[in-house]
Image (cartoon, rainbow, N blue to C red; front, side, top):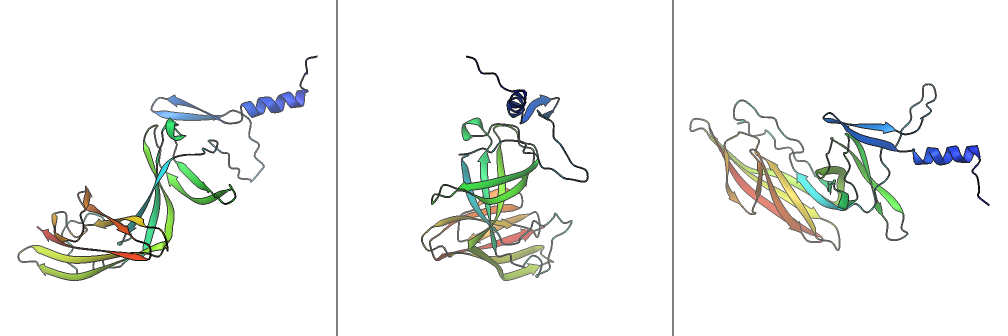
Length: 242
């Protein structure tokens, strides 16, 4: 004998089917329409999940040490003050790079907003929250970078070793040392040492202990590997001319 659902049960099934947001392209934007009513009490705030939790998403962890702590703006003249930019930040930031692609468990247009990340604990199979970040609009098949916070067992130190300037000849030379320490007892870490060449736009690195990757007109990355309970030391000299 066929079983009929009671009206209340039928309503719940229909609501569950239309519970999420429906996304569609509209002009050069994306619209997200909630498929069910949402009740909001007076003077209340309510959060509604835009997407269901995506599990098994592949990602790449990156540790980045930016000794300056912030990017300096472009100035209209060379910064010849010896003490400019010598304050050292000790925190090593943790980033995840995630490919927003269907084979990676995603592949939907991600609107700007808060993205929360959890990791499965192998000890008991539970999901543990490890961080969150605000992301910009991210199209399908693009890469999103999420900053989760700072590493606990990896720290950095940046200092100026020497400084030379000849304003008549129009040049500045600066010697920089960066130390990255890994206090993990049994894990080697890879860290990107990020340096901004902040004194002037025309620069060249004249001496260095490590190879670097030029990211843009004023940013270089020194990739280093740090052994357990070990330290990596990056030294370089930069010459500015104008």
